[in-house]
Image (cartoon, rainbow, N blue to C red; front, side, top):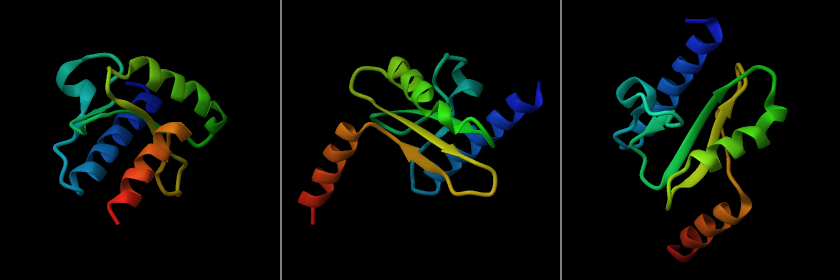
Length: 108
């Protein structure tokens, strides 16, 4: 396995652990099912692309396109990504984010 593939695997495991710490039964998708496109599974209603790259964050639109094309009906496509020594970020389309925000706001 190449270094970049190993780094990708480690990051997918890291993202799954973030969701596990919040109570979700998340896991790295590739290691269990071998299904293409599922980096992290076990989080309902979202499709996760996990990307750990030092450079190349200019590719966010390509990553989002991948998440959108791989998402199943009813899933919100998101990209969770990070640069070395920085916090994890979540990228999603504004229309999806504003819907989540409004639902959160109404619950207050």
